[in-house]
Amino acid sequence: MFDSSRNKIDIYLPFQQKLKRKAVGILEHHCMGYGNNLNCIWTIISDPGSRIHLSFNDFDLESQFDFLAVKDGDSPDSPILGTFTGAEVPSHLTSNSHILRLEFQADHSMSGRGFNITYNSE
Ligand SMILES: [Ca+2]
Image (cartoon, rainbow, N blue to C red; front, side, top):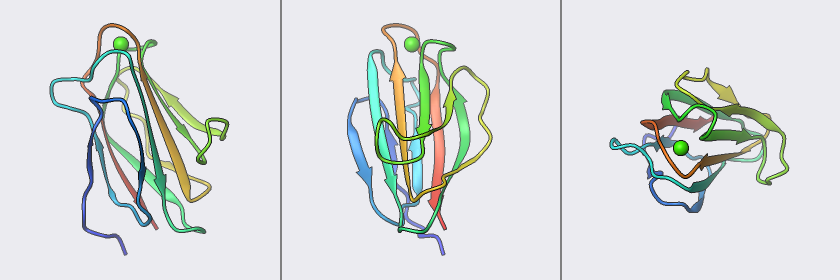
């Protein structure tokens, strides 16, 4: 069963964070929009043998200049499950492994609202 606890992560500051096993939570944009020149990485790690689900509740990035990439594993070279930009809210994603890596890049100008993603593992 899912843990009812929630993690909220602000994407204002560039950082790298590893989220705990059996993680359940929300990756959330700031309501004032995100900053420029960002390169953020989140790694979600659940129990070996499990999978991680992502649900996109909101998504709005500067089209073609700011990107969110979702990779199936913990390395920069892991297979890409999807790369997203613009204002179209992606459909939900499920990992093939127990680790997901989210890489968010924003260029030097302009931003959108950001994104709000719920993640959980089974
Ligand atoms: Ca931008």
